[in-house]
Amino acid sequence: MTLLIEEERNEALFSWYQVEQRSFPWRGATDPYRILVSETMLQQTQASRVIPFYHRFVARLPTTASLAAADLQEVLGLWTGLGYNSRGLRLREAARKIEADGWPTTPEALIELPGVGPYTASAIASFAFGASVPAVDTNLRRVLSRWHGEPLNGSSLQTAAIASLGDPSSDWNQAMMDLGATTCVSKMPRCGVCPVKDWCSGPASYSPAPAQGRFEGSARQLRGAIVRSLVRGDAAFRDIVQQTGFPTVQVEMALADLMSEQLVNRDEGGVYRIAE
Ligand code: SF4
Image (cartoon, rainbow, N blue to C red; front, side):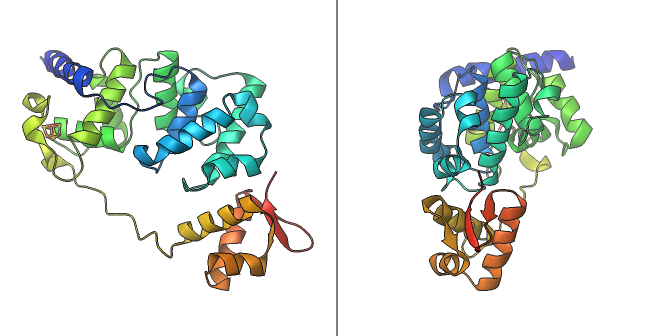
């Protein structure tokens, strides 16, 4: 009985996806490098904002070999404006590991790459290597919780995702992403036009996460401003304070964080620069 419900629901989902799927430059890609780049950029950044950065990045650094050989200054120059610059550093580390050891193909092996979490590992395994695995992220958690009528987490979420998975998994994962992004949205889901409403318990079982704190004046804004400044050229502490306009103590703390993450170095003369 359960199997029949899953099959009917996935049939309705796939029919909807054929017509309504969103278009992105990375959609349908089977090159694991392009999937790794796009999925890394999509962590914590909206898809519409990622598009121009993705185009520039893969045009300038089209392969793991080119990224592995690139200076961090160049990588961050392509990344800056996207936010969370340490993702660029981790991506280059991943490219270097892949160049040394070859591409891992399973989620269990992909997750060993720097900067790759469970979702990204499953997405690459599904889209590039045809593995039959669900790519579980916040969107999928929200939709599955609503289907099942209870908040799903941890092993219950994983179990529900595996039980619900359609074939091919790459289409199913992308269809679920699109359903979560366009219809089964966090606040005010559009149940009236939802293709799977006949097999869903409704939106009540999922509570939206609290909104992120303000960006203006935040440590995140300052870190981005420092990296942008250093991509343009090396700078002394006082110049960074002047360029960013933040209080000295906050700049000190942000620089300490960036150095501990190996994004920035300081030489003996007190000049800061992007790490190599
Ligand atoms: S019916 Fe509503 S809650 Fe259920 S999947 Fe569709 S949009 Fe989400």
